[in-house]
Image 1 (cartoon, each protein chain N blue to C red):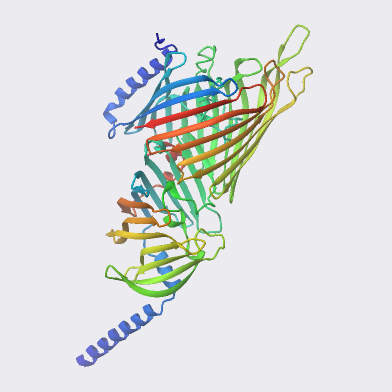
Image 2: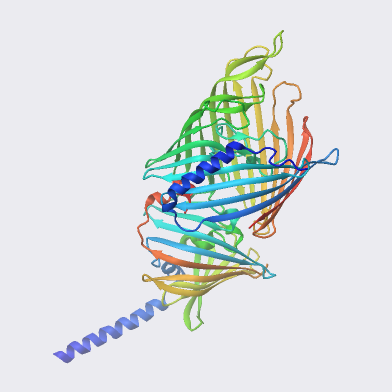
Length: 260
Length: 372
């Protein structure tokens, strides 16, 4: 009887392993990217961002930002406080992103004028603070904005990755297509290629450092390289905290004006 | 010899000392190190027709910020050397103390306060005085002068109620007890923002050439319409002063006026196009009043950024109808502006105030800024 139980368990485990392998191999590009978009990222997050902009002559410019994000269910709110350089210090930016058809709301606070200004949220293809990242690249894009197709599997630094081609649904998109290299074990993109409207390779995003913080895989260092202008942006993230008690009042006119 | 502190503003110094003393009282609650930045700006403007230099100055701008446990202290003095007139001028642009309560923030001292959604044109933005000098500004909003004021913001679940009490502008000859005061309620919401305001603040009246209280009730809004942001402002002014022709010479009369502004910001790739239309309508048309019953002001701005936002080019076209007074005519101005961030520390600016039609002279300026 005992042997029967052991054999049954053994067979079930073997069957589950085989089924698991088959189901992973059968995943479509859409399903892979769905797992990437739905990867656990916490309900709230605070972090410090450092953007190092490097031009073709290796001249550097550094931007420092303190960022707070929280998912309230119907709406996801984000507030950024610009710390440096001196000419943008105390400027703040707030975005409310809705889970419905409603367009995002965006405001900028201009400290020299002590003025809140509503700005259009349509220009997601704008480059963020002169960097190589657009607002889309920084995470404002959604799964439904592209058609996803699995085009292969590769290895990056010993890690098995799915290679997924993403083609924008909208005709008027900044990119003709992107290619995402998804780490099979963790559903996190390790590399992404961006192709311009003519189909030429425009930018490559490379992840340099990942760390598990509070059970969540977090990219701490990545680099976007624009191959056509030979301009690079290194984005470093530090002091990351997840699921902290962030008061809803932080995402308000009061805090934008007060700063941190 | 350079006139040392030609326009030393004694009130500024008194304010600095008062605020510094207040900070000392709060010094036990200092949080972290102070933030200090310096800016040196060189500015020269030239008369295009006479090819002569009109204004030239070198300015040192100090910004000091100290966070406190429940507030902050900010000091922003400016020292300006007028290199043409050889004058030295010390002024306090901003200097205030903030105290944060649970549901309210109090700001005391010299400060810039902006009301309304319009850019460059003013309807309800009446608290700060505006520079009367004609030199071309890098940004049209640079003309505002900080007010010595007490501002209290009370925060509700939906919006902010703001109360302001301000001293008269230092350039005016009003008594210090002729306070300006006003209330504003503002809301940021899904898809649209609005504010309602009312008050009485002294502003310079170009007809009477003096500072007078502007008593008003008004409001403004801005709406997100995809690539467009629609904005509007309106205010009803009570008992404004105007000049009327009479056999014995110009005579001051009072009248009510309604001012309305409608604007749209259109975002198209790297371009921003902003159009604003403002109309001021006299409610009771008095005979022989030295202006039209309806007076308009239009601004059209096209802005584009290049080189990763390091180079910004703006083109302003401004049309302003004026009262029928000596030296005043309707004016059409072309104001191109160029700003280039050579590095995070050095910014170069240049621009032109070109009078297409009107009595004002055309001027060109260049500016160099170093922030460290």
